[in-house]
Length: 187
Image (tube, rainbow, N blue to C red; front, side):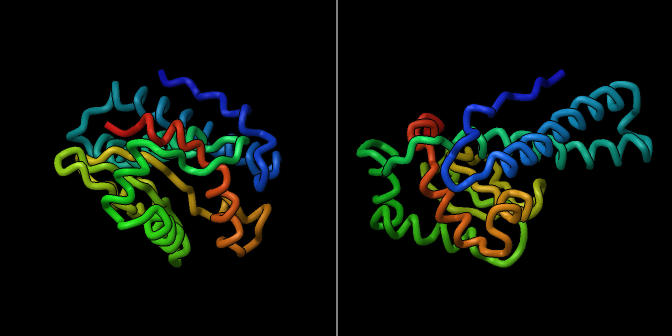
């Protein structure tokens, strides 16, 4: 059984109301509950049955919803800081030409129409750093790539505080990135 993680330490983060974060934590807890429920059902249902097949298809949605939220909340901090000098900054500059160019690309990806996730991922094979869009939870993941920075751009992540002003939410998110945590996710 998977236990929900406690992210209450990010309550009080500038740019995110406690109500928004608390609602978001509740949504995340639902994914944890559903992962556990599906694992229990899958232990007694064969994959070669129609019910088992549908449970397995649903599992990826719930699992990724759980893990993406954990990565998202995990890379938020109440302490605002710029990306410090170090390996991550060096690699972003090498890949994108400058940190500012990477940030513009990450923000632009987040501003695209639609719902989903924006993820800075590291390709384990090439070492490349890629800004990607994940549509829903279970479509758009890069096989073999590790998520380093995750931004939720489903409406539930911002609409309570920002209405339809996604760009204002992205500004708040960029100011709350825990760069130390992001850097520890590098290989």
